[in-house]
Image: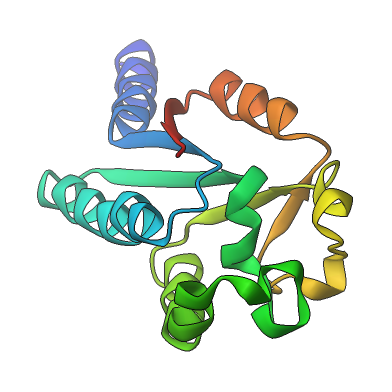
Amino acid sequence: MKKILTFLLLLGFAQADDETARVVYDLTTKNLAKFEKSILKSVAVNKSLYEGEFKELEVAVIIHGGAFRFFVKDVEKTVFKTDVALVKAYGDLKKRIATMADTYEVEFLMCAASMGKYKLEKKDIMPFVKYVATSTKGVIDKQNEGYAYMKIED
């Protein structure tokens, strides 16, 4: 009887892991429309699809390259202030990104190594963003944790 209970307990843990899918987005695009479609809309849709199957979807986004622009606190105080479309959309965009972090539990991870290229410091970045030493290390770590890889680039 003890062996059967142990087997059933282990089977339950194995099935619980099967109920969680994981994806890491390697985000480098500076294209606002592509960012909205590939991250803001796609993540919400895919989370709903997995919930419909009684599964969980864990999402991580590694931010580097042109994608830095979407995660600054005040776009007007950065090198991205000349991006007219971004400046126009930024009030709503900030709210939508914060919702992704809060409601959808998306983990946003920024490449700390290349922030200087865009004259950015941690104080310039939205508070829910976490940091990885390099984007490559962030992607490798997530893939080693079982995350599927999706590249979002220009």
